[in-house]
Image (cartoon, rainbow, N blue to C red; front, side, top):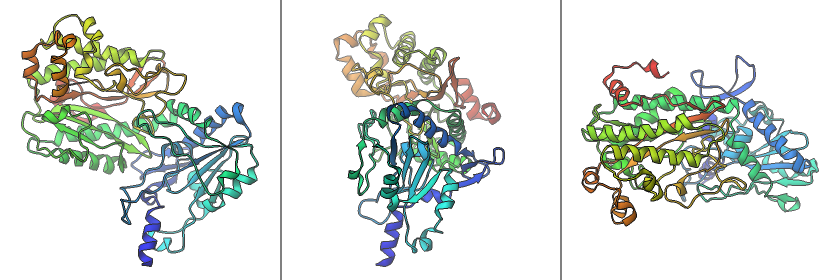
Length: 513
């Protein structure tokens, strides 16, 4: 019984990643960093120090005599068992602020002084037997480059000794999930003057704008993910199962880039499964056998110390596009490139979504699937029939990053397609987003449009019928907004010729390095 109690206690509180993630002295800067070995990127802990400084500067005028209190993530039990769900991943606001990968922690930032405090669980002696050495607080202080370290059971006392007027906790709705951010809670918090309204809009908006250090980490994880996609494109063959392609991606990004996690459930849709926008979930677990001639839509992204990549490639499993596959693929690529060419600071993301629609509809009309006025098609929301999802989203410590619909910024549209857009903000320098137009032949949407007097006038029924069961195409790039415009961080073959050359082995990997 003691064994079970110890294992359950430990599993519920310790992060398995801690035993693998290395904290080291970066040789060039002589500053501490996090990494997964000498072949992986060294994440400087100054990244998180800078984030704390940004937060303090943003809060000082509003409430200098206050302390920010964040609660980190906890291990989640697998139902009623003594194991937990996969490998622990830190809560994103906590990671942004402290870079701490341990579970069960709290973090505080004194707004008046800027000093940081991290509170770690106090483990029993048995912990050392099952999970490794018990680290001293001084070791943890150096490992994470914070000013002060204590145990969680000292939290109440330390906060009282700071003698600040307010305790700022995090509470606000994630506009993608509808869930509310985890507000810090501990025994005795009722003794403090707690404010849970000031912090959320400030820290969420700060996360929208990436620092140079954050951009470097994102570039790394996007490069690792791009290389894994290129690998899958080259090794996948007719007769493979979709999950075998997923396994190749996971192994490549972990083995070569130290990405223990992916940022979301891998989508490996082949044939008609390419029209299932979030394929790969438990009910559709990437389990179809890929047939010769199938088009593969693979949407996968690695994750490195919380920072996400999100890339979609679409390619023919046999290495050769059919005329219909080439037609749809090039229509989507045209939409992608039109946005990349136009997007820049000051441009509305909503306008970019509509630009992608317009470009796609023009190409579909040129190919004989549609007829009539493009302006009238736009008024009829015809674009949403072929691309019901948004053009793209902010990306950072969450694959669908926060800050999309904060108070004071443009609100979500109710129009088809646009209502799925995860932000309507004006673009600004140092934002990282995905650009991911698509074209899908989804029977329920096609049937509805064919029966709608306003939309059916634009559809060519015989041509539409030819594409029933086609699946879909999505081309998703991770981009950085700079003063000049878009910098595409993704490094995969994109044109039809590039893809066919790559799969045939006629292009070298160095072209995409």
